[in-house]
Image (cartoon, rainbow, N blue to C red; front, top):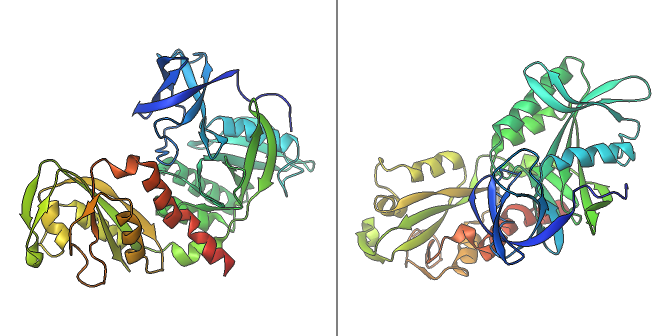
Length: 383
């Protein structure tokens, strides 16, 4: 790989908070500084107070921040957050002929307009053939697998559908995912979070050349190694349907006592609550119903929802029966539970758990969630 650094000289700071999608506040050389965040994704599994963050000085875009975020540390390795860096990485991999199967393709042009869309690269091979290429940056990964995206991407879905249409009409097209984690072995679309994107990418397979590469860095952000990742579409086909388990999040503002249907009265402390449920079919509809206030009272959750703030939900699409296993994992992290809540048809003590602080901002909670969404799939791959 090229021995040149991909970034201007960087400084190591400590991440403090993220006041909005485009700004990170960090502790740098004893002072709190604001840095531009070049990646608008959620990155809940990466951005925890106290983690190491690399910052580059400079303000080419005349922003109000003196620094820009380059990367954040996870598992003792830097995860590059600058999404445009993936285009530079892709160009370098192609130049070095390091993408298996694409050794004969080189960049002929960048930012290529095709109809209403603009794609990252136009590639050309030694035969004079061309290929449109879209590059995506993937920062969501587990012990062995990576998934994209970490938030709904309507733009990404539109890009994939357009490439598919162009390819069906005879144009050669490709998508390259740059995965910022050296240990990963496989890649899949993140069908839990964005089933629309996952379906679009799956539908593109017969027409669009889809590849994923993981990368690693030497000190100073010198590109080190790159590896092609497997894309086990059979796992998506098995697990990606609209059914599975979920965690629904509520916040109770003040201590209260509520009548929970036939369960009777229960005390609820002010704080955050995580409810674990399941839906063998119609997972999206079930979660949407939980979020609504106007509905016929049926489940225990419906009664609590009337007195609590809806904070969203996290689905896990699967054919496995994971509801009780997930409830047990949440209970191990919680500060308490509401006896009998949501557990009338199983042997669990409860499926509603109390947290004094917002659970989604806790590193241990995100690690648990990642085990169920990503790491669990490794068992399926071994079958």
